Image (cartoon, rainbow, N blue to C red; front, top):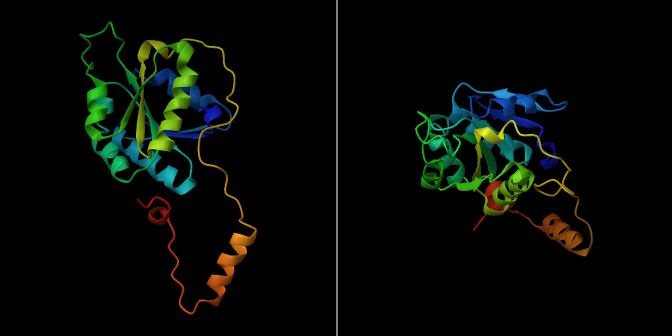
Length: 201
């Protein structure tokens, strides 16, 4: 997660994401913010992303843990807000588990994107793809992780560059000077700012 620039994660722990959330919380410089309800973890991650200009991250457990995020994911889709939700899932051979459901159908019904973590050795690539998709598609992406992958050790190599928006910069040059001149000479300038101006269709 630190390779993606993530230092804060929200969510509610359950049996399918317990090891992952605990490991994250024990890393220096990383903070896990527990929530009382799964959907509030998603909403907190959306708000954190908006306020920090980072991609917000949350985690929930399988089945009802994910379905409790339904309305919050719809909110993120309607706001066109990039975020990543890491959802534990029942292993493929546990179809009779009481919490088993087709999580891809739950996610797709909200309009959010679904990304499957296919195997432990593809975990870093799958995680990176989820972040890139969230940024590019401007919507929540649910990274679905089977619970039996959570305690598998893998070799880690940090990515060349974390996902997420570019660092802010101060404009300069002829275009900046021209814009500044127009603004300074205007009698009643109108300035459009904020997410609506940036993400206008």
